[in-house]
Length: 78
Image (cartoon, rainbow, N blue to C red; front, side, top):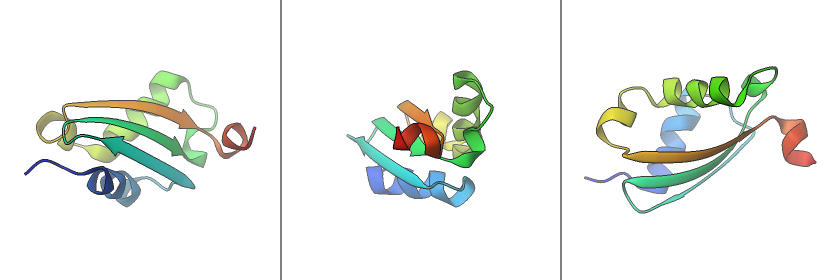
């Protein structure tokens, strides 16, 4: 079964405290906007690593590709 955008959103939300999250996709390729205080003080690569850690092995098996905009709450408001 291919994951839905709602399922990917839930996977991230289950393991990362998010203030806002949007996910769009077609079952294997997804785009996400993720807003979390966990990104504060981190580089873009470190932010992506936080999301990959939240998704765990799902990035290897269920999700083929994930394009992300990772923002702190202040960046999102701006």
